[in-house]
Image (cartoon, rainbow over all chains, first blue to last red; front, side, top):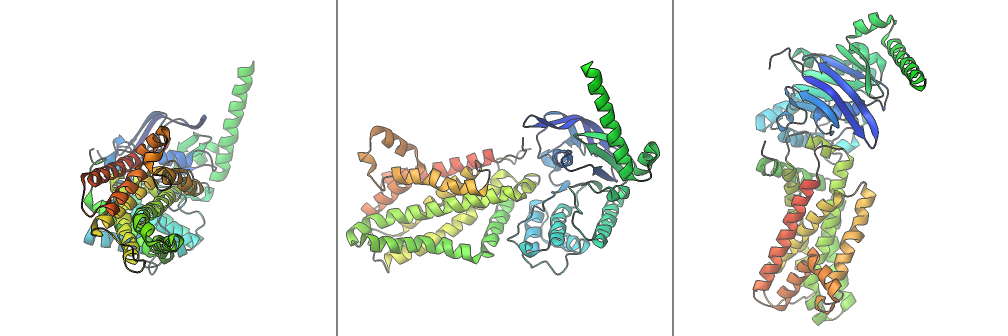
Length: 255
Length: 250
């Protein structure tokens, strides 16, 4: 695999759950070494799409390739970092015990494990909290602890579901700077958000609504295409545009 | 990739250590898990108030109480792991399902050793329970019973959608077994249908083994057969647990 091959390639990806279509025939590619933003309202399928990339969501139809292998392939399990919306971490363990366990599962041992923990703790500004029970953490500390687990194994692809929700602006700023540092170092990041002011911080955007993409392009290009002053307006224009089209299609269908 | 049904010892041990660390941070649960079987034994002693009946029944209950407690502890712990999302996180990581289940089995198994040990020592000393032979085989079988309860709890938790449901599994899975295992009525005296039901339920063999060991001073082939059946049920429940742990949700 060369450095320019897409890290993710989806072809006609469909996920249906309980009779509902969550992901509706998505075909897209995600370039390596970039921060790709997955933006859309809650319930639009962002989390399902991310779970598909990580391989914990069964695909109804279509194909998803991650780092050249089918999503969820055993060889991907230590190359893809995943952090869920609700921090999936043990509240009845200390931060150190959590990181030690997940790090061991990721294949880190002894010195490498210790170094990875020290680095992640410092990167996420969790220093001094190592020996505290995670259950006593504040919301922001908890979110960062959850993120720390995803970063531990220095994965090639990081899939982060709403990683900055509820964090204070300074910390959010720092985290986005770190995301770009990771991308500069060669990692690829897919980050979901429903806050449009974070969209501008991404290298590439996937605007998502009701299981489909409204558009996918770099932020500047989306602004140019829609003629909108900001990405929020751009999203609105694209969303109303598409609902007008689908209304017209329905009209046409009735006739 | 192989690995799904092969044990990775490092990851199994890490999981066992993690589960024990979780317990260590919860002293109240430790005290309850250790004290409850013993307190129940003390209660049994005074309820029966008859040394002969106690000698006959105490060993059976030393097998049954840890079985029940381990069932519920294991069912709730795994249900929590599902609800918190840590199970999904682990399933997206290079951890085998058997590594996870065996890690649980080892951690709870070690705990069961202490649990049974305390109940046994109190029963044999303070409560004055007399055994025909050594206490070691009885301790071994009681620990196996506890591990059996734990394995069934791990398996049952796959069918619980919430912690509340997991709690309900205790009466739903365990109480029928308690009625049919020969504690209330001897299995030989049951109608054929009940007898047949009793024959396919794991707790029957746990109680059977305990009854035999308290009746004879020496090891018999029948005890060995009971132990083999207990181990087979344990293995089946663990493999069933691994099969019902899904890496992907539908």
